[in-house]
Image 1 (cartoon, rainbow over the protein chains, first blue to last red):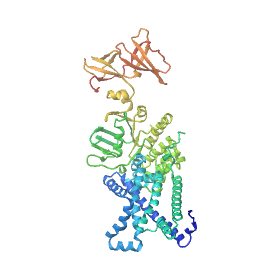
Image 2: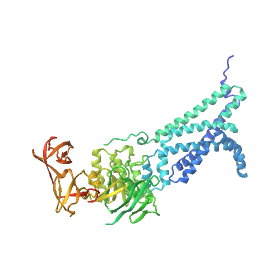
Image 3: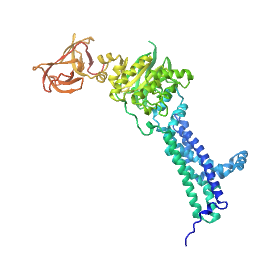
Image 4: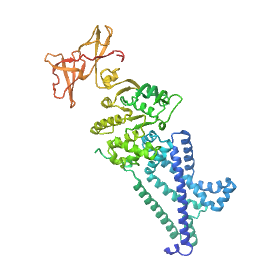
Length: 241
Length: 351
């Protein structure tokens, strides 16, 4: 028995629209979570290296708590658990704006924020210590030294591992189907169910994820090229003239 | 002389009260003065500089900058509020900023017009106005050093601290930068403290040299005083080189196997001492019947360093002109110049 490939099911009927909606939801979910994860990551990563012990401890608690629980558990927690303890107004807002989507955003943000935090901490710690000292010696406060010197340099240094983390976030967004977010994997499964064409539907899903990830990777590579500081990463110091 | 820096009995321990990095250091630096802190690695010179900068908290003593206490047992003013300029061994230029932006950094609180003018002045002072748009990776080591100096000088700090400023430069660039940095600091009229393990550098640039050993300040004085009348055996050996030969005080003279030296310090008769002899104090006189023997000769470019064995078996060193060749094993007579004598008691370091 040979399997009769019918690629046209991907764009016939509702299927094409479903897949496009799935792609759009995956992009929105990932992009929003990515922004929050980066924010949380930069903040907690910077605090992990701060010269004040209580701030370091706070950031360490955040990282260890959120990265050591499986993402799936976080998704269930933020979808089934957390909304119940929200005040009335918060619950109403959620129900109006799609509780699945926003729970997934929170779960992905805190989980990947914790992971991003470690990447950023490593970046900050690889900036020579004298740069921090030089900043405060010129009269910058510790906060200014982080904002103007350490973080801008660290962010340039961590583009490769941050790319990796960003791709993981996009791929992990597929888990949101478990709490009913109609993202790409969810829609792929829906097409499969309605058409009974599993091979075509899942091949399409696979290729779409691949294209999304390759696009992100190539954009990040260009960002890296545009922002690199030659003397800093490749130690190419010019010889005495 | 106006005081800019005053350290009183400053101590610092590392590792939970363990190893003493510096002990009871007291030091006063006047306005416009250039002071070198000289010593071997691990002597505490960099720790002293970092304590003044505010990167370390002292365990004892007090530090004043410009008459204001910045550290004692109750007060600690953080680095950003001390108004000191700092030049680092690796220059620590901000790699994502141009030379000009680096210099501008210390002036972030100034209004645009004044800071623009000041940036021009600072870049001009270090002779880098042409290269202000370059990033640090586009500059040579010497140029990076100048940018670092301009950045430190731009806010007109009360004192500029330089940590091993020349150790990352090639030999010829180092000689050039020593002169340039000295000129720039003088021109700016800045008070400066720099740390070095290179005695030649310290003697050349500094108005006064402080010699540190094992966390203690052994002596601080003008370069020629340090060289000619070292306070301790360590200083004698570390600044220049020195041999010590035993002597016995007999009235007006100190008798040694190199002859009798005047007893300038009025030491009591019968006192056993050690007399410091520098290689440039010893003259070798061709004499086939001489009592001394040449052991080795090391050619050093500008001179020959001879190791000579005395009749007692003791060896001393002598510096001779670069063209003066005496073969190893030759018999020779040794003459000394008795005009300046430094002697130490045998048991300790007191003169």
